[in-house]
Length: 146
Image 1: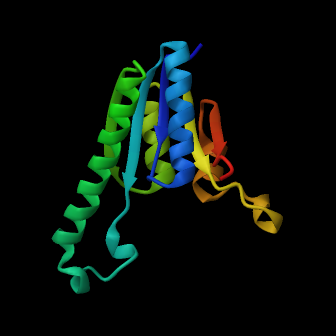
Image 2: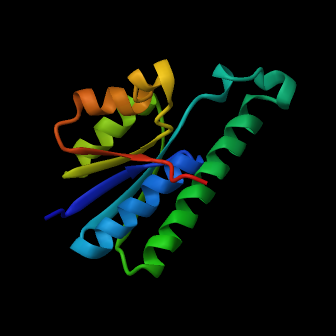
Image 3: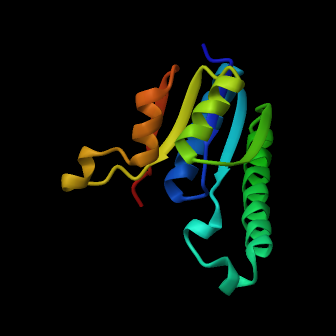
């Protein structure tokens, strides 16, 4: 059914749920798994000069991203799933969509908080943007209840 599955993760609990689903689907279908984490310029969230300089902050963000996808690649390997990892800088929805096309993905898997009340009217910025523009099916995984 699926040959190439792309899962995007940021290391959050809802991303972890998406990763678990993606690994399970890949294991059952024999699909290749592509794991993507998108790194966002830390200057958007913090003053890098206060934190020790832009290069220092960028190095930390990149190191954390590499560690995250390496850990997921290990999980996939333990499940017998072939896995390729990507750690890229850019806008999150745009980078997910670009990587999905580049890798000929036939399924994109994302996590979402699936908020309640008025907030539930929106999937979330990333899931909503990717779902609206993707050329392939998008599976949005809700974080399992605690």
